[in-house]
View 1: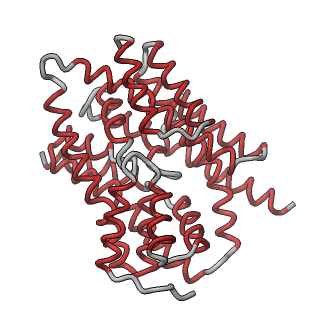
View 2: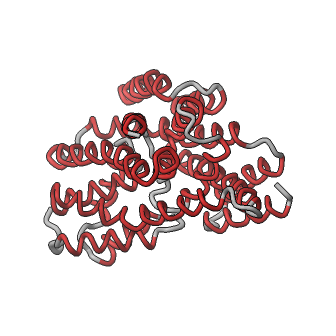
Length: 185
Length: 173
């Protein structure tokens, strides 16, 4: 499939720079689709979804993977680097500044309310993670077998605190075996 | 200093390739290693950093703050490269292979098998962090109600985090 219009490296960098800024606060996937599919028309929805599915399969931050995948599709290896750099430049700079501010303010007199407020925001951020998992599960995990696998991982890591590597070494082959078994019937 | 940088790079490079379903998957292991093994920060600081970084895309830049706490700005950059480099390189290789393979059965099988694993890891990470940092009923209540709100409504996550901060501050933390 040919792309609707060629993406120059400069435009690719600029687009991902914009995405990195607009998605502050959330909705990164939605912003990537908006910029690349609707505004620039470099890829269509089908290509976007294919890359999105792929980004979920590769370990690592899925949205960063998505930027790398689309960058690769549009301009190869250099496109992947440009997309990654554009996406991360502003968020990384903000984080380093936030970090410097946090380390300086944490121990200052009269700053205890910052710690309290952060505890509240952190508690809500944890809820955001759990809610994201539940939303993903409602659309992608519908049968009993996969539910048991997700449940076992939740108990193993969330409650029993078994290290991630050990859980994955058991649960990845189990899930793969179950999928193959279900498809063979 | 060099030793700490090497520890940072080794830890995050390994986690980078284990993060199935996104950065949230490796948060419990990240916390265990940074807090309990290397003693770079306390569990409470980990939660603060989690809150600070959660709203900045891609939502897993907490690694920068952990690296920054352990070894300054250079440590933050080392953690960033180690966390996002290996997985991005893998994504690049996968993109190359996949665009040549077209629609193959193995791709569907992998997608289907990874879905429950990713969902489990995402939910588990929230529970693990809550259990290791929250000891106050107000804070627990904020987590539970936020989970319900963001599951069943379309409220903006950043707004909900702001409300959480206000509620806990007013309750006196």
